[in-house]
Length: 325
Image (cartoon, rainbow, N blue to C red; front, side, top):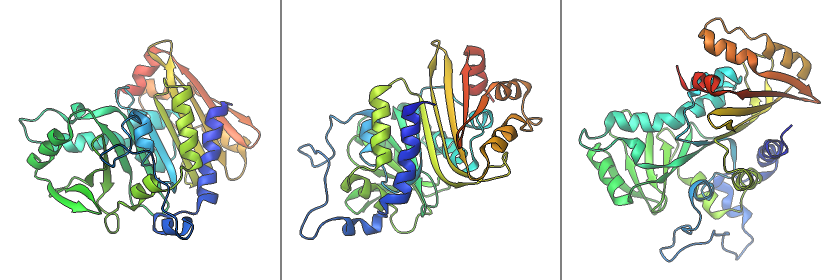
């Protein structure tokens, strides 16, 4: 079992069980007379510019997140195919879909003369959800100057407002996220259905000490920067293939033989791990394409104590199946 994935697996359960720091309670975590802990900041008062890429995104991660997805956007992974092959529970599968849905939604509403949203953002995305959130929060870095991206949003008929010190663009149509500029390099997509501004999980991420899950994901990105996908969720999680719920689920993907993918899955069933592993081996894949069904059957599920571990070294042909639908 991959020790780093296991640490993140444990880290999220500790965040769920021990953090107890919903954004509304942030003040309760600060000793009387003390200011909340702050990250390093530059002269403009925004999180320090030396935190780049995934680390810049982690600075805003909700400390009460019960599920998170880190993904490199330039890797060809189809969320539906990936979720099917690696038995991703529905809650986490939805988050995997929401990350590219941000770009697809923006592409549908952008001005015809503006470049595609795939050019607006950096190569990494971080998504999270908490017990009380109604949807997926998606964080992206900017690949273009902030003013330029704001112009794209204005021409997409989004209305700008100042909310809690942040510039937020509100959709006038069916786009399901508000767009909040957290600083000049990080933008957050906040579900429009959130109660109030929806910004409190982000300000909690900025102001409170890092959660165990954040610390463990930061270690992953430092120790193995080739990681292309990392997703973990704490339960109880509904799983349609097992006949029992999960306590936790985690999956990691990284490059294999240049164009392939090495994937490891860890599932903690609420009841019997042996029965869960058997259910995964016997999944009904009759509605899938022959290629995807064959690939899913290649995932080797084994029992390691109370955990079910699945592994696959996908060659380039298999990896293409994960990127085609």
